[in-house]
Amino acid sequence: MMFSHTFAGLVIGSIFIQTTLAGYVLSEDFTKDAFFGNFTPFTEDDPTNGFVKYLDYTDAIKQGLMASVSNFAGANYMGVDNTSQPTTGRPSMRITSTKTYNKGLFIADIAHMPVGCGTWPAFWLIGPNWPAGGEVDILEGVNLQSSNQMTVHTNAGCEISNTGMTGTVNTTNCDVNAPNQAKNAGCAVLSKSTNNFGAGFNSIGGGVYATEWTSDAISIWFFPRSGIPSDITSLAPNPSGWGMPLAKFAGSCNIDQHFQNMNMVFDTTFCGQWAGADHVWAASNCSSMTSTCNAHVQLMPSAFTEAYWLVNGVRVYQQGQAGTRKRGVSADW
Ligand SMILES: *[C@@H]1O[C@H](CO)[C@@H](O)[C@H](O)[C@H]1NC(C)=O
Ligand SMILES: *[C@@H]1O[C@H](CO)[C@@H](O)[C@H](O)[C@H]1NC(C)=O
Ligand SMILES: *[C@@H]1O[C@H](CO)[C@@H](O)[C@H](O)[C@H]1NC(C)=O
Image 1: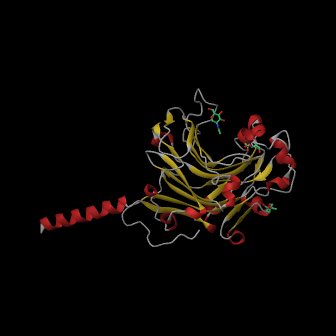
Image 2: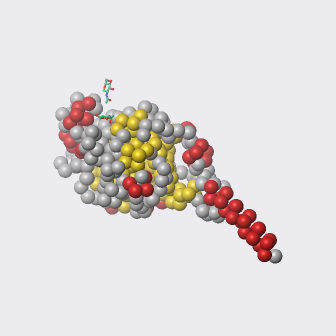
Image 3: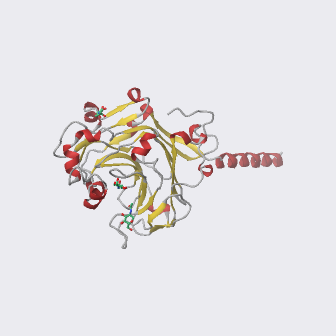
């Protein structure tokens, strides 16, 4: 009697382990009309000095900057003002997830992203007490940039190696005060592809950015609309089958120490510290229109008709516990 009970316990134990190894379990499903309600509008001055005025949800809806579901085939629209000539910053949106995260797999399906001279759109993660809690810029760039730049910002003691990714490491030290890098350059990975950012991204209906954050690495993949892996659409994502990521932040860096309690953020700002920096604006082919970025953003509302996000949704997965995994549910963005 005693002996057989023990045996039964061992069998149950091994089933538990197999199920745990089976991987990621859907934790949050911020899709369709469950998107905006799980984010909070940020309405303060832009910390990056952009020529922008961030609206709350009430004003954003009133001014036509925010809409969801029915008008856009299920996607969540976040636009910018395209009619006025504001003197104190163009109306736009920045939203922060109400939940904070420690590790996980973040799957964002985006159908359209802001593009154009003066724009600086980003989808990113940020922790508290910047840069102590870390920052991961998943999808980011400025002006007429044609490929995505992925960047991590930390305090001292985090450097990455140039291996295991298809992108090119441009700067290796994630410390915002790294001595041999521009202030706040962070560790940046440049992609060579022209379908993962801006006009090229929009021309293929966008796709899926997947970001895996473990204790070993923070890795970012992009899948164009026509090449989204079936394990993502079936809500059972397994990054081990996705091939090399676009960017992999790993190396001489204690990930658990440098990245904590991060929120997801979507925003569209204008000009400011990156898009509006004199040398960046001058090199962007935008400067033929106006000598400064701010002048362009203030005076040319009609240049911002493509400066909108269409986000189908974001799903967050965590490593599974036995019995909690959902099966047989198909993704319906
Ligand atoms: C790459 O890094 C260098 C500094 O090392 C910087 O001048 C340059 O702007 C970076 N390139 C891009 C595309 O960010
Ligand atoms: C600016 O335009 C020139 C000529 O069309 C092109 O070769 C160059 O790549 C453009 N630069 C940027 C940053 O788009
Ligand atoms: C201008 O912005 C409004 C509100 O965001 C949007 O509904 C409209 O479609 C935009 N106009 C164009 C031409 O894109």
